[in-house]
Amino acid sequence: MDTLNAKYRSAVEQVLCDYAEFLGNDDETQMELVFDRDRDRYLLVESGWHDGYRIYGTLLHLNIIDNKIWIQHDGTEEGVANELVAAGIPKDSIVLGFRTLQERKVTEFAVY
Image 1 (cartoon, one colour):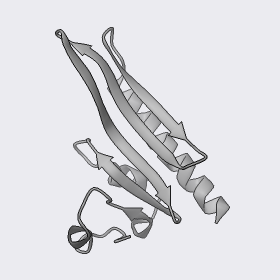
Image 2 (cartoon, one colour; image 1 turned 180 degrees about the vertical axis):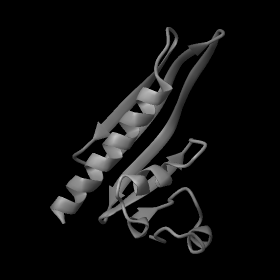
Image 3 (cartoon, one colour; image 1 turned 90 degrees about the horizontal axis):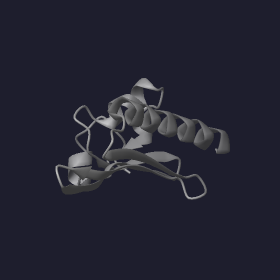
């Protein structure tokens, strides 16, 4: 299963990097990638300032738990799950952790 997790890590990191590159940085705000490979925690965080207001928040939070990619938070319009599927991750290996168990049961993705 370590090979499987390595494939999942690579896909998660690439998808988050692609989002960070697409969103980009400017003079006042930055997209920060946070990869904890030892604990399989992956974040894309926005921080900075806009018109005198503090900007800080997690855009994406993913974990790899029991050989499945758990999407803990998805602040994208299209849905990061679709990007993972496009990267070759099967739907039954993706858990929409930000949805209730009942909601997960009626999706095409893994329940848990």
